[in-house]
Image 1 (cartoon, rainbow over the protein chains, first blue to last red):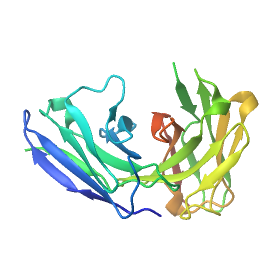
Image 2 (tube, rainbow over the protein chains, first blue to last red):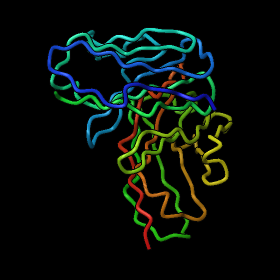
Image 3 (cartoon, helix red, strand yellow):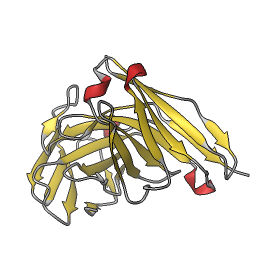
Length: 107
Length: 118
C-alpha cells in the first residue's frame, strides 16, 4: 500500500488566517491526489481532485498544489464554515489510501 | 442530479451476516466505479473496496480482503457490501462512494451506521 503522511494532525487558526496542510506519499503518485472536507457528523465531500482541480461549488479560497510525492492544500483566508477535518487521498493505485486527517480548529 | 442512497442503520450481533446497499441514480451506473469507505467511531477514513458494475471487476484493500464482499446489480443500479460473520470491530459508519475519472470519490452516500454488539 502507498503510505500517506498528512501534517499537521491538528491546527488552530483564526478567521482570516491563511493555512496550509501538507500530504506526502512514500512513492510517486503523479498528480493523483485528492482532498476532502468533513464537518462533524456530516458526510465527507470532495474539494480538490488531481492535485489542483477545484470541484464545482468549492470556494476559490481553496487551492491545491504539488506532484509526485509532495502536496499541499491551502485555504487563503479562513471562513467560519471552514473549520472541519481535512483528508488527503491518493488514487494512483488501489487501495486508494487516505491520510490520517487534519483537524482545523478555532484558535 | 447524482445521488447515492444507502440502506438504513443496522444493529447486529457478533457472528451474524449482513448486506448493506447503495442505489445510484442520476448517472449511468454501469460506467463508474463504485465503492465503500469505512469510518470507525472518532477515526479517519479507510478505503475498503470498489467494483465496476459493467463487468463486476473488483479491487479490495488487503485490510478488508476476505472480510467483506462487494457486488453490484447494474439492472437496478445498486451496489452491495456483505459480511458473512460480523465482529464488534466492524462497528462503524460505512459510506458508499462513486469514483470519477481521477478515481476521486466525487459523490458520497449518506452513510450506513453499523453497530455490532452482543
